[in-house]
Length: 201
Ligand code: GAR
Image (cartoon, rainbow, N blue to C red):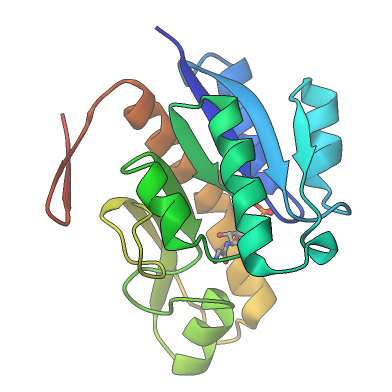
């Protein structure tokens, strides 16, 4: 049975595109039933249009408070009846009410090897710290920032002349491989979570 997946994105949407393409190529047994974005200018919206994915725009700036935004977001997410919610460059923290509504059903990709360099600008943090390897992490979302059980990680070298953009480009290549792979494993029912540990069956 095909799973229903909904994607949340705030910007460019290249990871969203990688997921759309993997589904179209038959590599993920799923249908992408929705793109939800907090940003009416997100390029992800154009990608959704081309792929025939329905879009819900919840312009964060039009809500009176974060609580009102989250109420609308929760309703939009429930409406999709998705089996999996995929955060793909969604640049806001999901409140605990939303996380608790979809336990072990929300995943995120982060551009660093967690638990290092959480939060914004993971690539810049890695360059500034002087680490020799970095990468990306796909993980389940829990109530703490960039903290849930880790599904997959891929690493890349950090070269000595790298700036943030050069490293981000190298990591992004791995993100586009890693995220569809993690989503495929989820959709095939092959992820088993015990505490913080995710086993692949
Ligand atoms: C990606 O590098 C993703 O890992 C990162 O934002 C970029 C989105 O690119 N996400 C975060 O930093 C989340 N904290 P995309 O819009 O082209 O997929």
